[in-house]
Image 1 (tube, helix red, strand yellow):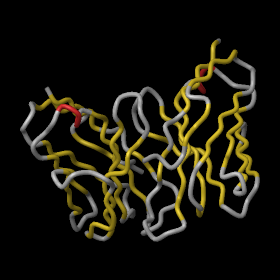
Image 2 (image 1 turned 180 degrees about the vertical axis):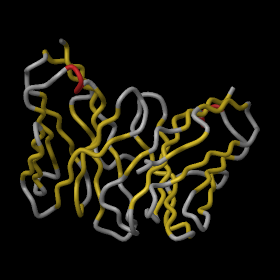
Image 3 (image 1 turned 60 degrees about the vertical axis):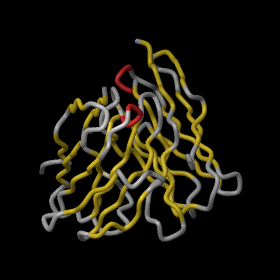
Length: 112
Length: 113
């Protein structure tokens, strides 16, 4: 079963607007990561936030983590057409399984 | 530096056959992970290998198996293929047993007819 669930499943915005994607998870985590996938191919790591962090920035990306609500959000500011992709959150569990569990993803379309 | 490479890019098999997928991790990475991504869905964890040992496997039947070689490359074998095995199979590598960041290959698209 999926650990993380992204919301919304699909998002369509105009170039220049901000895009916000949310991720909810079920169990305690060591860290939470966001990945991007273009055209159903390999995933690219975007950002990692640890369970003791609340916010992290990387370029136009801003990630927040609320462990009390078991949720995270990814904000892409000033979106570009090239940001069109699927975005996945992945949780690193506290146990010794050492496996990342991926959510179902948000499909982002940025219209030029 | 070469990234994670997977072969073949596409693989077409018929039901009941066996499929072998290959993965070469980034140089220096000892852990290899396999994920299955059915069309339009998220990634399902399949297998994790580190230092030649299977460390963990997901909720998949035993006909999904694999191995990791001394050079850390890995092979995923799927026996007795079923139609629902059609999916994109992604390999990822990381440094050490708990690589916090995974590096993915471009995947093998397996089609079972």
